[in-house]
Image 1 (cartoon, rainbow, N blue to C red):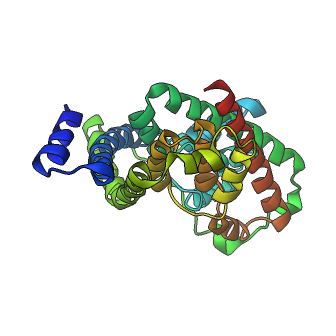
Image 2: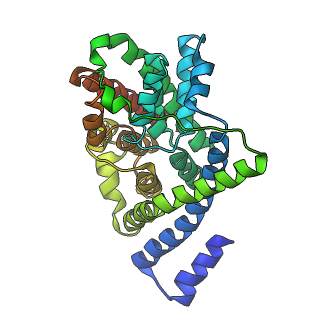
Length: 314
């Protein structure tokens, strides 16, 4: 229905043609589809969040095996709509709550990578299978990454900074009636949408330009199946960038439609949203450069492996 309506607007009412028509059609259609599904999924996640606090996670993790603890922390990361930088205050809250280090790093990896906005956009664009695979691989990367970081880190790598730590406050979770939870979740979803919609539009706009004007041969040459180092290059290129999932995720469809392999495109997105230079600068407040470099190296390696695995199975 929406596709036919957009076709009528672009090709009939506005009488467009060629690359401009392709770009405009892509922008209008994907904006409607992506923003609608993002709103629905963010609303559902916001409702679930009304039942969960840092203390809830701590209580679930206490007494569990390391694997289960990492898994629960990684799943909790899906329920927190944060980028790589805004995940850090809750990461510190986990530290204050004495949640095991392995689990805290699993959360720090999973929260930006398995962002529900990215999952919603992938679901809207490619369907549930790609969205599910992305989420599963993200969880695996977070679980294993947290385990490895815990093994190679030392107590002195965590810098105790009391004034900074005191700025972190756990959210106040009170018992409210079901309708109030629904209302609060809707308000939170609308707030998030107001914060991200311009970034979503920006990402879709760039994707529309790629879709309409970038030659397929260009993408295929540097990021297609003929380049065995495409995933590695994509991850290295993504780390210096800093953008939220709402901006990067809309680029995956036009990149893959032009010949970039799915695993390469997704690994690029993972690197951008999960690892960034601003994140490293903020983490320097609470951990040593040695641990930061280990963290980036371990997570980056995991993303590269995931990218090649995606390319092998898709």
